[in-house]
Length: 139
Length: 104
Image (cartoon, rainbow over all chains, first blue to last red; front, side, top):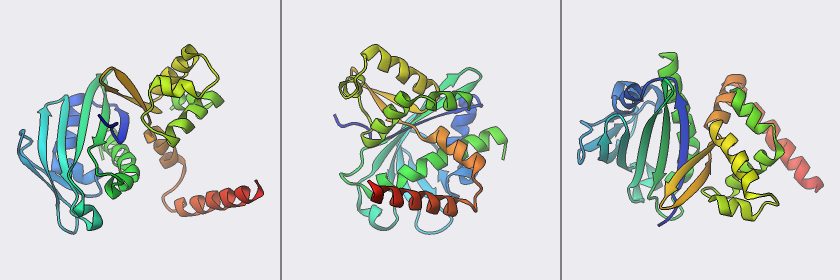
């Protein structure tokens, strides 16, 4: 078993159900995910389309949808060199934390030396901070 | 945010974060093997880092893996460094690093 590549955690002053909504509602994701709309019916096996402000959308598939506890999906980035890489896997775990939530993100199953993993080292902390601000600040 | 600053105020804990930055996803044993400190002391420091969200943990089988979690540091950065100052702050930090490396 290889170690997960990217792991991040964030505490958010919003209940798990709200965090789930922020992850799965395209109008919400657009506000913190570099303008990306995550469109899917969020049923296991369903496709996901990552509609970006410009360029070809990324694609994925729902792997786990245990509302509001765990959401996992595969992700294929359609941009540049990264388009040649295999699908990676994103897993969000949402746990109650006092009156708020603790959100853990594990992103793994990357190709060896993946450019996407390198790029997301900068991307994820910013997306997660944005998610928190969106929920707490009511932007 | 108090917890983040308290956690960072200790050199041993900063050392642990540096070690995770160099190699992410270490077990407690791996972290202990390279520190001249008891397992209990390391456990205690790690607990403080986890509580401050500076370290994230993931269970893999019977092992617990530790990851440097930069999210709270990002929040501090966002709070006190303006959007348009970022490039200049980064340039100054790069300059300092380059000059100090040459001295060594």
